[in-house]
Length: 160
Image 1 (cartoon, helix red, strand yellow):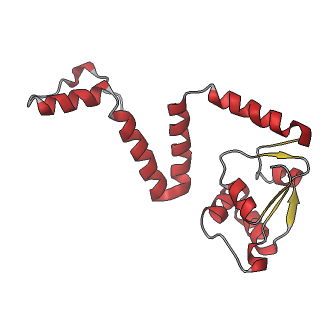
Image 2: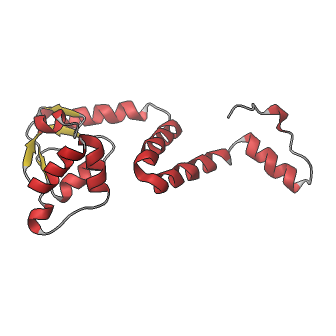
Image 3: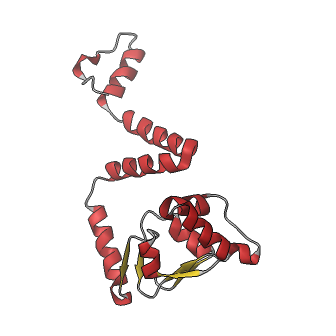
């Protein structure tokens, strides 16, 4: 975030996985002041990040907060000088890109499952199912069914 993340822009940064802010960034809500609100992820995720009391303050008072204040309340991950914002963001992206995409996807689904309730659990289940169907174990089950035989599960570890 380099500049203002106010109103809808604030909600967008709140629902991002990570937020890096320049020192000149400003954060806050305008919704109730102009007859608008976000009763979904924008409010619930914010409460998870900064706590219920602080989230209520942000939404009810519609004030602006500096990048340092946002960092202190846990609203952003890192604050850097404006001239370092792009380089820092690219550096973080390069680090993330060095990791297993499937592992990151599963970690994200697991984190979101707790926050997203049933919708998050369903996403986690869908991802797990997709990954399972790509395994030798799943192929054995399918082939055994098609060949009308008992599957040979002995060659697969029985570790849940």
